[in-house]
Image (cartoon, rainbow, N blue to C red; front, side, top):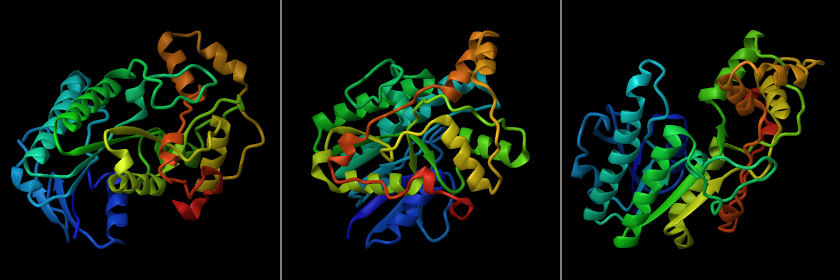
Length: 304
């Protein structure tokens, strides 16, 4: 029976991956900060502790989802944490996996590791640009080191770069938008024709399991999307449906956002993140047989 080690199992994506693994015949061990009920757990804080080699004993495949995205409490220590958790701990885990005879290592990276994109173009895995921000740089550095380990050892590494992930208990900017709509302070966004890629968390965990089982994924990077780009206006519309709120018949004129962009580079950056293009192609993943089962356009409040 296949034995999996999962890190980041209590997070938004990791918890759904556990749910999927519970539907198949396998053994699961967790590497987590504290004991998780009903699972064999090796307790380890990746920020503070060395990883016990015991965590990798008899493991066939590692799903490494744990990572550090941001720290709003103490920005001064962010860069160090990115390196300690996203790079150093990832490489340490992979090297211990090699020593323990693990066959496959699946790393959940980010589209930010591939950098930004030209307006109007959906980028793919070969469009490698400067990684976006400290977070993107840390993920890209981890990717390169893992691919080197793949090349030098008998352990196969596969990397997934998810686009914006949505679904029950979503976090980050989508949670902020959803909360803002529910409370009535998030303004209706205009239709600008921009394109943004997304993927439902349940489709993402299916993709994670797929690359773990397909030999064609060895030593490869895959972007994960649902194959349908959405405009920011469509995303706002979908969030209204999910929250059970009526769709406003008006929207903030784009010219107001254009004027606001002149206030400062930071405001311009924020507005571009809200209304700009972030379109990615998952054609490479689809070549393995992946097809998303869920679309943002089909979501409603019963799905959240």
